[in-house]
Picture 1: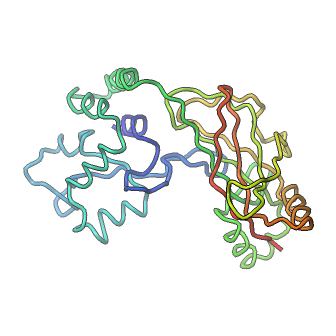
Picture 2: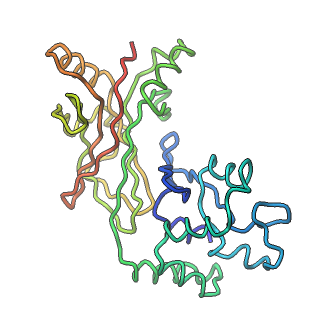
Length: 278
């Protein structure tokens, strides 16, 4: 059932408006970043346990959702009484195509036929190409290890607490994930320094720079569905641009990563607010 949830979900935690992705890149490796949770609890004493259900019904696809760890603890722990089965069923309907829920719920699934049913569902729903990109600051710990810090302010805090890490190479990490059901061709990764007072203001775009040829993927790169890849850029490259922009009287809002796909589409990250590490 795990395969069904990961394949048919819309790519994020099922809690309303939670942006946490199902897959995240950790130390360069794609990892599952959510838990499988039960709408009606699996064991006596668990949240929303329904005594009349059979064990098979509790394990069934229609009784399972995906939650990030914090929301899983909230829904099944601290505030379990606030969340009813009907609420969680609504989340499931919002995060999965109706065709998938109906087909998997009625198929009497076994592991042997799961893949076949999922392929049928994907065919009926229609293949889709969906790519997601996130931009994070990070530190290069070793030739193969890179740590992401979440925000520029978060990196500043970590460096203040761990001054010995200030000499580590600083990078911007574009984490690119294929959350759709079609492979995507990554043709280029650009970074844009956003200038002005609004996020849609003018800026300076650094196109296709490859500071880490040994670790960045060779482009064009075929990104299969469910897979992820990262692209590193030296922080000092962007720092020099920021300094020059400020010297010219511009306000620097932050940085965006933009992924150019073989289809001509461009996918952008959210704005990473710029904070001077110095």
